[in-house]
Image (cartoon, rainbow, N blue to C red; front, side, top):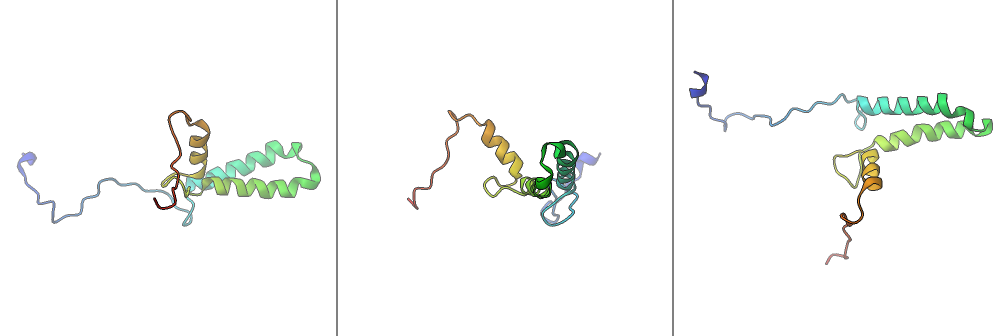
Length: 106
């Protein structure tokens, strides 16, 4: 019986998809924050034995900066993260995909 009801869709704004993310800040969501914590934790607990004691502070700073940069949005691939862009770059088939070159406004 409900199939016979006609609704004027011009009166209503109907969402095509609902995509909600858990935002922690303007740039980071909860999975991004978790990625940073796991990356830093793994580098601290698993890799600190491989780093000279004089260089550990620099290593910890590096281990905190790298996952933050990797989890930011890519300026070259809209809607993707930097780690996804790097993955696509490393695994691409160079015989199929060619880069788009700027011909200086031509």
